Image (cartoon, rainbow, N blue to C red; front, side, top):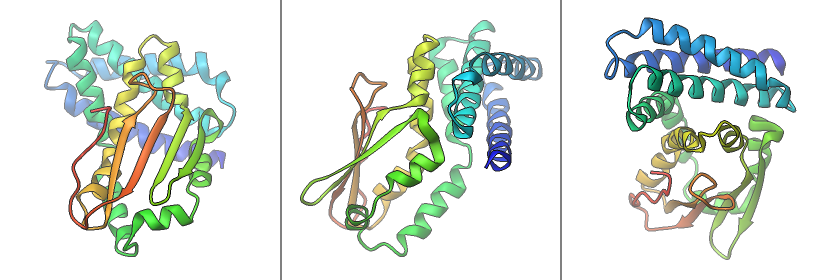
Length: 224
């Protein structure tokens, strides 16, 4: 598990830095030095906070968050406005493995004529617990016809909150559009809705999956 975790973490870091290098060119003339500083600062943050990880998954979360935080701070240190700095890290992170993620969901939908019904019958929380570890808690709620995936505790939000930059959690939330967007744009009878999140002041994050007409559904996402 540790070896796999290290490989997966390395792949995400490489992907992020590649996209960050490209995106930062729009706001900075020189990017090589900035990327070098981001790596060094991210390592310092990671070393200071790695003791908080309860498992290998937690180490990956802290490593990734450290990279986002260092990127944001280094852009601001170089005179980039806060809103533009956030957009650079948001776009960079959202692009990581985005195409494979969308393709995977489309392939899954080929075998799921009714995604909501499938989720109501099966539990997806164990999959997320295995992927994200004990820095998170995951719960499920079911109504008569819908499925709600609940996150009462988010290790990513907790990390950035402690660093005084809770808004950076939205960079991670933005990545979810890679799979939520595919569900909404599909011709399956499903609509997603994220109308409550920790980063927007809620007491938990809620992902609603509801029955809908078998056509593209509008995007409802409070983090946007």
